[in-house]
Every structure is written in structure tokens, then in C-alpha cells.
Length: 125
Image (tube, rainbow, N blue to C red; front, side):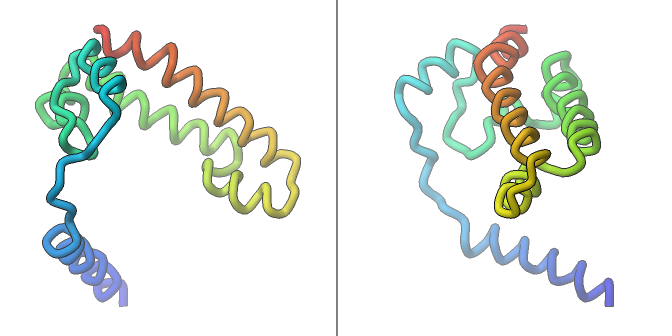
């Protein structure tokens, strides 16, 4: 039974990438493109910039901070908060749970601090 489940995931991935892919380049705001080029990210035609997330970039200081340390912090935060962002924000808030409100507010504050202060420092390495 597990094999059918895994095979379905694999087959769904193939169908999605081959037949449902958007071949148009990603359109972003020119102001954002200028800001990203200031950080050294110039290839912005894909959903995920290869200059940030690629095998060759993984073994750099920036790559280790972004991917490995970032993944560890996401896992730690999920365990510490008692759930993930969508679990707290969707299920917890819909059932009026105070811990989910606190966790969601902290997620939003953390995301704001990361996007506006910490990420520019990491990208300038």
C-alpha cells in the first residue's frame, strides 16, 4: 500500500513538471529586481533564484547559513512553538486558541525581522 502512495507522489510530480509547468518567466516588480541585484541576485526568471538555492551554492558560507542553518531553525521553531505556521495560523486561529494567536504574531514578527534586517546581512556576505 505504501508503494502505491509513493508511486502516486512520483507520478504526480512528473505530471506537474511536464504538463502543468508555466513556461513564462517570473514577473517581479522592477524595484524588487533592483534591490535583489544589489544583493548579487541577478537571475530572477525562475521561482527560486539559483544564485541562492543550488548545489554549487550549498557549500559556500552563504549557502550553509541559508539552507542548513535555516532548516535547523525552522525545525527547532516548529517543535518549540508546538506546530508549524499553517497549523497555528489556520487551525489554531480558527478555533480561537490563544497560544496560536501568540505563535502567529511571533511568526509574523520573525518573518519581518528576517526579511528586512537579517536576510540583507546574509546576502551581503
